[in-house]
Image (cartoon, rainbow, N blue to C red; front, side, top):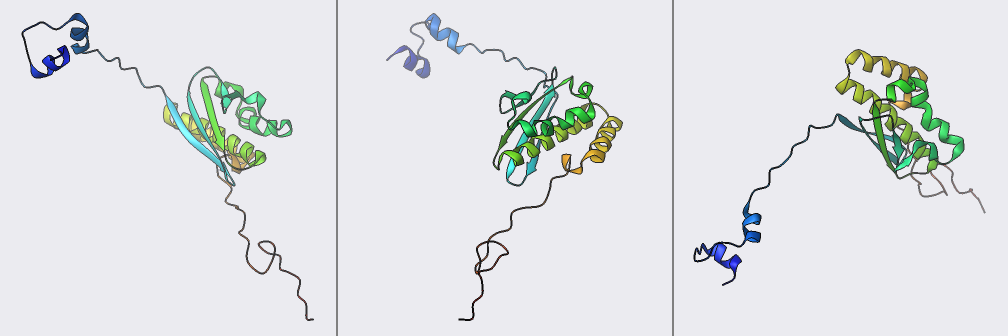
Amino acid sequence: PSCCERLMLGSTDRPPSPSTASSIRTIPTVTMAPAKSVQVFGKKKTATAVAFAKEGRGLIKVNGQPIENVKPEQLRLKVFEPVLILGQDKFSSLDIRVRVKGGGTTAQIYAIRAAIAKAVVAYYAKYVDESAKNELRKTLLEYDRNLLVSDPRRCEPKKYGGRSARSRFQKSYR
């Protein structure tokens, strides 16, 4: 029998080799303190953005890219709105990573801005204090309610008898 089989059988005719003895030893596990983090999502139509906010130095990334690289450029200001409204100081101790998928480009941008706004509010609610959270919420709601509350409008499904949800084929008597 090989040395592994002897170990399993409990044979003691030969001491285990140094390589086998090292594999028997237990390795101490290191537990790290959990980082302060929150995970929230923002939605618009079929686009969903998941924001992961944690302690950091003010980085905001969207799908691994810096927020400054968001396309299209005309809507880039929309993504910056939560930062511009609340002020850079609120984001200086936070790192926010956003993953977005589904929908079109405009819907994705609106989902990203909602996710960033919700992430900051959730982080302040969980780790800072309630009064700061209420102040942030009030400021964001005064500017645009859709930053914190998702828009319930969806595309209406097509029906028979026409080419879209509401329009009908032209009626003819002959």
